[in-house]
Length: 436
View 1 (cartoon, one colour):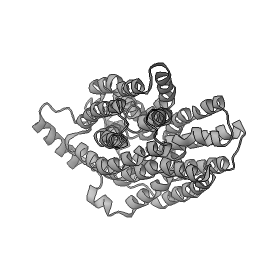
View 2 (cartoon, rainbow, N blue to C red; view 1 turned 90 degrees about the horizontal axis):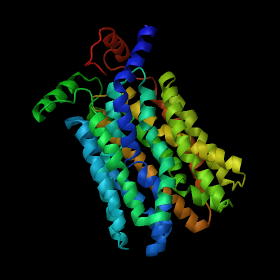
View 3 (cartoon, rainbow, N blue to C red; view 1 turned 180 degrees about the vertical axis):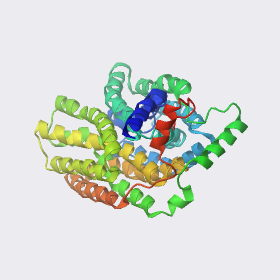
View 4 (cartoon, rainbow, N blue to C red; view 1 turned 120 degrees about the vertical axis):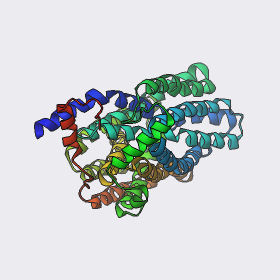
């Protein structure tokens, strides 16, 4: 049995690498990382150009959060109904155009905020809810690793987009920087996804055939309905837990340069230390995916999401030691890397795949709530107190409490036959149409 399972795992990547590759690029060049990681570079330029305060500029993040709260459950349900491919491709295109619209700002803060809302609404299909649905359908034996590789794009492009954006600003100005960043999803992620991103059973020739195929697939897909999941206490454990977790992990990242500056670090040290975030996100994706394939995911979550509590506490002490600051940043980035993997994995294991898109989308709304308001609250604490000590200490408590809640989820649920064995059996019979 073990040999069959291992063989099935290798075969999953042989057949599923196009989906993982396109998902990595689609997520990494989508709504989740690009606005979040570039705003810290562009904010000083906007403040200089229009006289806006830093808190005003970061105010776009809660607007994006609210739009995601509205759009992500709907996007998940639409993806369940018509397929994730169409949703992902359309959203990538519209997201790129919406991000480019920032380049035409005229100093009206209301237009700036409106652009944030529109970008989030049309770009919600680039969030992990769409891409991870196809990955979950393709993988079972190596599901955690496949999800980790798919989501590694957030760290990869989170690391690369900072110096890329800074170079564009320095050479061509902030307006050209917005256009240059907007070109990434349009010229890289969109064409690759067009050719490589296909969900299982979603290649019907006509719309009618697609609806029939989707209905048949959903009828045979094990798991809970969206309505039943909303009435399940495990759903609300996940929802409540991920609000303080995403707040405490997401809050420091856009503020990290200012946190280091307030702790007394110089410009060169700040650039070097801040770049560690993206690299450690990649580590979180890969290591986290490897661990949740082999160990109980809530236990892994408790360990990996409690670790940045130590980081927040260390930064709250006003450390000026580059080694300690660097370690703290790595811990925060590592947790940011593993969050999405854990949510996607636990939705599949505790609710199945029947209504995966809708359930994940609803939970992502709670995640986005914490991640969206976190940076602004951090900025407000700095405006009022001149430092981040208090809010970092609050985040320490929130991380431990949120991670501990996940331990209440209990054993994984079983939905239908063992798909790991089905994968191995399909490989033995050389069935090319079986990829789940």
